[in-house]
Length: 265
Image (cartoon, rainbow, N blue to C red):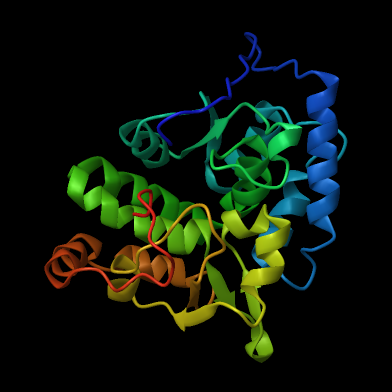
């Protein structure tokens, strides 16, 4: 949902099948192989369980109907093929109806390590495994419903909640170890290592703090918020999030922990 993109999503046929060229399947294969070796001992168990359940192909881009069979059986969710860019309204609408938007393009080799747009590798590898988990799935649906009813100004604060949970969230593991559940980290080799390292700050999840924390999309995150366990997403869903947004708007944002840039939000 950036202002411009060089990518064009590929169209599916009547059966939902997309004919990707061989070089794009090769990019998927390389992205998968590079990231899969980094996840044991770092990704949360619920994500790894979901990855096993989806049984993603390693040598080709998955077809969305393949994923839908598993997701529907697990939590009643399915994917929705979308263009490279969709509006915030459409994004919230899809989540509220238990459909996870997947842009049907894959990054170019020139942007192999990083791209700002969420491509099919980020969406499927990063997020879809956890959609087999009821707490994560319910939180995502609740978030969509909140976003549909929110004003433009309120959606900016909702974006921070999504950013520090679904995209860049960490959770507490047994023996005080940390694990990753945020798809923005799980689909990024560099951030997978960085997020659990010594450089960034990590703080317990407090809704008001999350809503007041600015972020940038084009850097390693200087701060991560840690939930106690994946089921804590159910507790967040029961909080009065919109009332907290009203209060956060009154209090204002924390000072950013990064260099200023026009695109910071």
